[in-house]
Length: 132
Image (tube, rainbow, N blue to C red; front, side, top):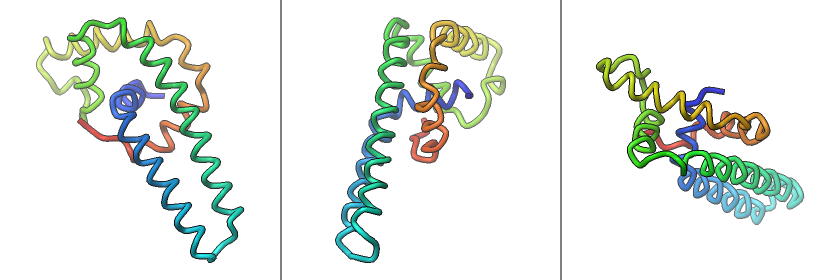
């Protein structure tokens, strides 16, 4: 898993939560049209709710890691997460600072593999993430 995706997820979790809520509402409204059975939509809604739970656990873990960073380091992570290009495109001082904070993040987020389902869901719902 790329760190940028995880970091972008952390800083856009509120937007993702709203998007998933909208998906739940959409499925609930579609169930009233009687095109498919209510069970079909209930299963889809249950899957989205389970995904929200897994993403919430992952966000809680990441929050525990990132809350120990300084305000400047958090802003560097947020900046990096919002980039559409690699950090190497920047001046050497900026690149070094991004790399330093990113290495610190990777060292502190050692238990990330325990949240395998959450990480998989980050990849699945990556299109919903706000950039920048």
